[in-house]
Length: 77
Image (cartoon, rainbow, N blue to C red):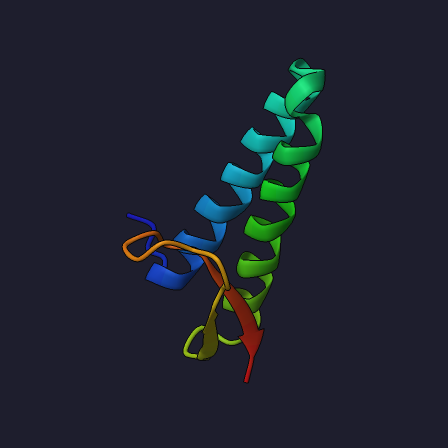
């Protein structure tokens, strides 16, 4: 039986999700830009995880986001 690490699995899932977003954007012109942006973020997180699986990020709360919503700006530390 083949084995993999949790981080390798997460990288694969993130890259697959990025591909999904790109496919949706290709199928729906109205969503193309938003789906491309989503795909880019998933790829960036996959890259970070691949480069440093135990790395940390500093999260800065985004101005204008209501309490309870989960929007943040990610900055590498």
